[in-house]
Image (tube, rainbow, N blue to C red; front, side, top):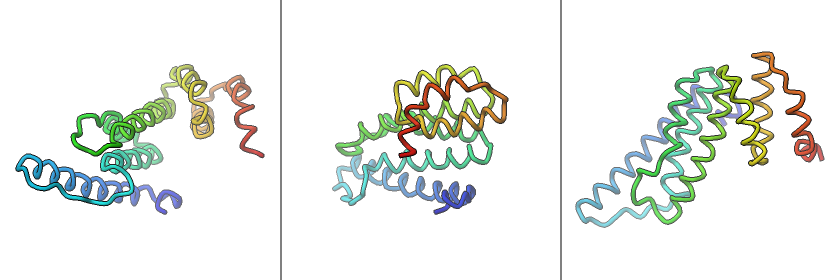
Length: 168
C-alpha cells in the first residue's frame, strides 16, 4: 500500500523490518544447523531468500524514487548476488537467478536516471532480449528523456509494436 501511495519513507521502513525478520530466521537456521539441532519448519509463501531479496528490491526502488541513487545502487548490489546464502530450500537457486535478472534491469534504469545516458544503447539491447521489461523500461527512459533531453524517437518506434499490445 505504501508503494501505491508513494510513501517512500514508509516503504524503506517496512523493507528494513522485513530484512531484520529474514535475517533473524536465517541466523537461527544456521545456528541450529551448526549445533545439530532440529531446523525450524516455517511455512512461507516463498523460499526465505525471496524475502531477503525483496526487502532490498523495494528499498532500492524507494531510494530511486526519492532520487537517492547511491543508496539505490547499494540495494541493487545486495540482491544482485545472494548466492552466498546457504541452505535456503529447494527453490532458492531459481529465486537467486530471478533477483540477478531484476538487478540487471534495475541497474540499467538507475544508471540512466542518474545521468549515465551512454548506457541507453546497452539498455536497449537488454530490452530487445527481454521484451517483458519494455513497458517498465519505457517509463524510466521517458523520465530520463525529459531530464536529460535525449532523442528517443527511434527507440520508441522500435518498441511501438510491443507497446501496442497493451492498449488492447
